[in-house]
Amino acid sequence: MTRFIIILMTLPLYGYSQPNCNIYKLAGNDSCYQACLIATSGFGEQGSKFSQLRFDQALSLCPTLDYAYMQKAVPYLKRGDFFTWKQLIDKAVALNPGEHLGYRGWCMYQFLRDYKGAIKDIEQLDAMKEGNIGYCITGDYHLNIVKALCYKALGQKQMAIQMIEDQLLQKGYEPMLYDYLHLGVLKVEIGKLEDGIVSLGKSIELNDYNAEAYYYRALAYKKMGKMSEFKQDMEKAYAYYTNGRKIYADYYHPMDKIFLSDIERELKVIDE
Image (spheres, helix red, strand yellow):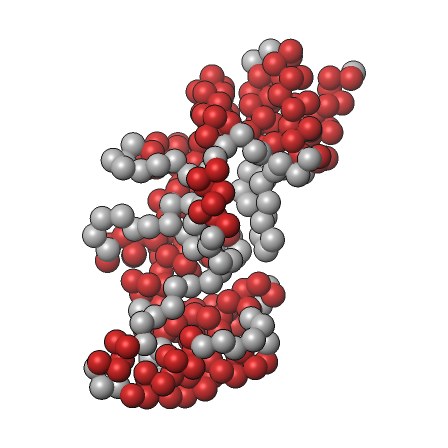
């Protein structure tokens, strides 16, 4: 678990790797070189007027600087102005699809709940890129897992299960924090309770930090009539949740996240 936490803590939230400005310099494109320097220099608080004006300045010098469009878009996403974000990120994608399709697809899934649009972006990236298409910008999901969760949201749960299992079998792939959690929840939802319990157990083994794994495993036990196991896991879910050990995100509601009220409702069953 420690390895994964270190990875996630080192990733800037919705940041993006800076371009190498020297590429423009070597190509003899001084305008884009200067624009790149402006866009990648310190520009104050993200989303501030000064920051946005700096990106405008960069784009006035080099209208094809996709990095500036992408960075200018981010504050609108965080503020919930999805219309403006989409206008800007679409320009970045048009200029450099290989760099930005994965990011846009992730955001379409996680923020806009445009699951079909997210699938389209991820599949377009997959068609363009040889080998591993990579991870979402927060670093905690492989894009193939994101696509699987989109299919789940569209009601195609069997397909989602198959896609997650296929990804887990990829040579060299190491399961991410929530892969087995989502797989376990899916299996419980379609009635494969024992398989779901196994997957949720793997999630706990990999990342014993989230109340959600215990909560959903408890539900599986409840459906199987194993009330002792249900009680044990649901009480553990409560203990974890009230101590902050739960799925958390600043700007969106992750799939399969639970609330304390969900646990408390189930605990009432034990007391009755």
